Amino acid sequence: MVRYQDRLAGESAKAYALRELTENIIKMELKPGALISENELSRTLGVSRTPIREAIQELVKARLIEVFPQKGSYVASISFDAVEEAAFLRRTIESAIVEELCDSITDAQLKSLYENIDLQEFYLKSGTSEKIMNLDNEFHEMLFVISGKEQTYKLMHSAMGQFDRLRTLSLYSVKDIKIVSDHRAIVDAIRDKDKENARSLMIKHLMRYKLDKDEVIRAYPDYFK
Amino acid sequence: MVRYQDRLAGESAKAYALRELTENIIKMELKPGALISENELSRTLGVSRTPIREAIQELVKARLIEVFPQKGSYVASISFDAVEEAAFLRRTIESAIVEELCDSITDAQLKSLYENIDLQEFYLKSGTSEKIMNLDNEFHEMLFVISGKEQTYKLMHSAMGQFDRLRTLSLYSVKDIKIVSDHRAIVDAIRDKDKENARSLMIKHLMRYKLDKDEVIRAYPDYFK
DNA sequence: GGTAATATACTTGTATACAAGTGAACAAGA
DNA sequence: TCTTGTTCACTTGTATACAAGTATATTACC
Figure 1 (cartoon, each protein chain N blue to C red):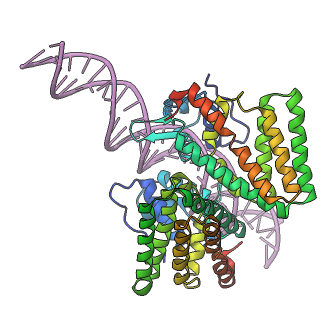
Figure 2: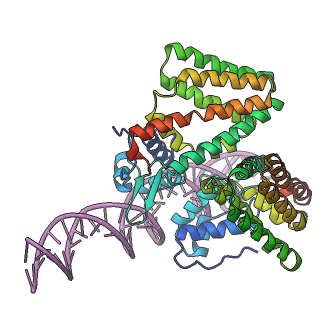
């Protein structure tokens, strides 16, 4: 069910609208084809249309919303092309990053990566899948931050909405245990300064979405176009 | 001098404002540190503040404008980090694209690339540097379109503003003749399905900005931060 | 003259009003 | 019954009004 949370302290109206919209689209509470009415959302969230429109325009660029002037704005279908392009973008950039890290990484940075992975393994036994997902996101972001590519991360992240929806729909298909062992193997390769291995392990890791995709397409064909 | 053109037929107010702002920032008519007054721009362009603000928000994401709430919006300095990240992003993606094209390119696509290069060589003798620049942009965009990565192009292109400013400031440093011969060598490598060569030629091609950068930093240190 | 309080003239953020286009419901007429 | 025309309730795009914060200049006071 579509559920809107309260506005955070100090949060701008635009940031609030963007957070709520993104959350509900990513979690598939707002399904492809659903109408996004600026007026209705304005009433629901208690902010004016202006910040709502600003948030919508961000999500248009992420290809999560489509705007038809004078007709309406709708949650976008999951696009085959968009998913494949996002996958290409991600594996291209992240494989280049781990290759670069083989040269530049410090012991302290390696340690922080291993600490994250240890936590992943901890929650593998006792925690929820959501905990793992958060640590997964954090792990990949760390690779960008460590290599001084925060802007690149932001740019790439803005295109990952399609991915996130796939992940929501296939929560139980790709086993968390595989994700975590992938991560450890990647960091091991970086530690050993084995560029070729680091690259290919990252690419293999980021190709696992294909299983999810195939399963989700079968289960929810109507969400795609 | 800052110069604003007329609004095109059928162009939305937002698109108009974005076009004019981008043009003047890229061409260094609006210099780093210059105040962007929403009210003044609103009067100048003859549109209201709303579309102006929407355009500004796009340029904030491109790191060409910085907004300080309740203080003002200013043209951003050319950031060392931003330039290096943009360079990394571009050579990483485009080298992956030419590698992929070695497998997938058709004869018709090869022909269209060579036609573009022939035009470049034609204007090398008789035309202006601006003609070459337009064909240069077109050439790189063609590589994305041919490989079915238009969204990726849009995303990457939005981060290339820093680059464009460097190119404006160093119009005469990197010789057009090198650019054009680079392009031909790259397409030759694609034609020969020589992935390693295509990759390294593209990387070398996209590393030429470093000469410009060093020169521009010396000539206009105040534009950087 | 030096200092502190106070206008005032900006800035962006948000709310609201108006313009213009779309499509569905519905009524009138053949 | 089918078609056509009209109304009406929506939509987004744009313009404008208001709120709130900031920095500067000015004024009053010591």
